[in-house]
Amino acid sequence: MVTQVRQEANVFQSAIQRLDLAAKHVDIAPETIDRLKRPKSLLEVSIPVRMDDGTLRVFTGYRCRHDDTRGPAKGGIRFHPDVSRAEVQALAFWMTCKCACVGIPFGGGKGGVIVNPKELSRLELERLSRGYMQQVADFVGPETDVPAPDVYTNATIMGWMMDEYSKINRKRTPGVITGKPIALGGSLGRDDATGRGAYYCIKEIEKRRKWNPKSIRVAVQGFGNAGQSVAKLLHADGYKIVAVSDSRGGICSDDGFDVPSLIKQKNESRKLQAVYCQGSVCELVPARSITNEELLELEVDLLLPAALENQISASNAGKIKASVMVELANGPTRIEADPILAERNVLVVPDILANAGGVTVSYFEWAQNRAGYYWSLEEVQEKLRKIMQAEFNAIYEIMEQIKTDMRTAAYVHALGRIGTALETQGTAEYFSGS
Ligand code: NAD
Image (cartoon, rainbow, N blue to C red; front, side):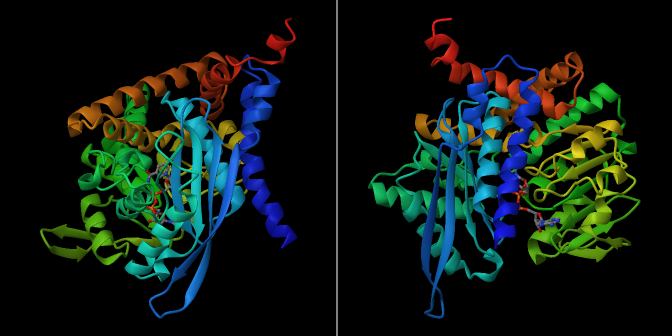
């Protein structure tokens, strides 16, 4: 038990260490860094759920508001057996940095429930989702803290939660949550926004490195929402997607996969299978089975971790062959792996930039809900492209100027914005009149 608590604490402690590394390059008051090392508030709730067989199960859930100086807290809700208090805090901290990194007016929040949703029926999942919202309804709101989907939660779940919040408050409040179904006030373009944001970053690297997509081999760890979207866009441009995986393991083919066929198969059968589909007929194609560990070490040019945290550590960072890694997952790289990757000249586009497309379109959704005026898909994608392109290039330039890695540069960029917001309220220097 003690070990578990210690390990839990490490996720958050390890996440905030990156602040100290970045602070060396920013003109920021030490008290500002101290403030960011602690979440503003953390709520733990018990959610009793009546199961289909009549029994009662009580689930544990969390909602953490890390910082809301730049705007309402913003961040997803995760349903996963490994959710913990420290993980939720780490994820909320990354959201504060991510929103600042891409310059959207939100702070950072995150929520989670300790559950394996695959074991629940649809009705049980609906009761759990509504039950979670009943417990956190005083804590969230369009002006305070705005949740969204994360691992193993989706648009349907967001729709249930929005409906529950609206019932509790006796007024329809679509702006309380983003990532909703379009029919309930969701934004066009939110479904593939995380993958698309990463794709826009990759297109900037393509220009800088003069890549020919056809000769670029790509491996994707985690073939869910984020992984599928980026793989689909890259495949359409001619990139060779040679390996993909999910929680049960992966498949690999030197010839590259037909990504739309893999997506169709995975979404219809819930199984990752090497197939080529024409219309509704799918045929198996030759491929090797690989483990998730093997996928990370494949001979590829571009590695896309799009699953969970802590996949790349000191023990496997030295074995990564890719020259570019774009982090769609939150926190896939442990802090000890960073210098090993830098030493090997692997360009790592960090999570707080690479996967910020999701929260950026969530911001668009929130803005549309509040205005009651909805945008076209082209408008959403164009606004997202402009933000991702500008922020990617700004961070790339900081990286070159201060001769550091791209992660530190992204934190420097984010800290500049968070620091300015916090410090306009006064620092020790201001109040002591010096
Ligand atoms: P998802 O639930 O749609 O997909 C997750 C995928 O990862 C699934 O295919 C699952 O089988 C697979 N997976 C789980 N454990 C794995 C393991 N150990 N090895 C390999 N694959 C594994 O979730 P998602 O929304 O695509 O999120 C994936 C990552 O992206 C998470 O880290 C999440 O925090 C991050 N992210 C998502 C969004 C978003 O908008 N969806 C935004 C920002 C960041």
